[in-house]
Amino acid sequence: VYSKGAVYCASKFAVDALSQGMRLDLLDHNIRVTNIAPGLVETEFSLVRFKGDANKADQVYKGLDALTGADIAEAIFWSISRPAHVQIADMLILPSAQAAATTVRRK
Image (cartoon, rainbow, N blue to C red; front, side, top):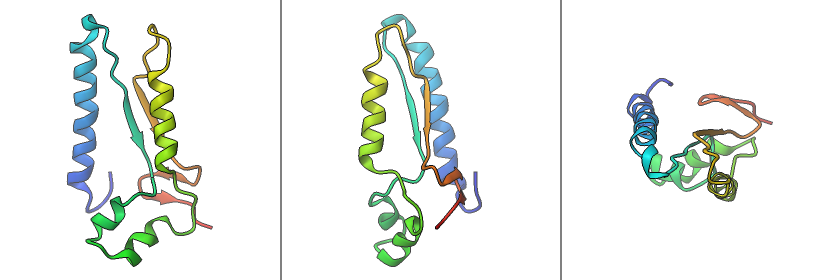
C-alpha cells in the first residue's frame, strides 16, 4: 500500500480475495487457481498511467533492471505446467532491486 495508490491497491486486495474464494469454490472441480502478483514490469502500463508522457513513464524504470513480459509469461507457464497434484496458490515476482511497491534500489 502506498500514498495516492488507494484504489489501485484496493483492486489488488480484491484480486487476492477473489483468487482465494475461487480456489475454495472450484476445489471439487479439479480447477487450480494461481494468483500471480508481479512487481515492476517494463510495459506500456506506465505510459498509460502518465497519460502518454514518455519522460515520466521512463523514470519508473530508470536505474533498475525491471521485469519483462517474458519473465511473467515464464512464471505463468511454470505454474500451470506443474503436475496435477500441485497447486501454486500465490506467486509474488519482484525484480531483484525491488523490496516493496515503493522501495526500489536504483543504480
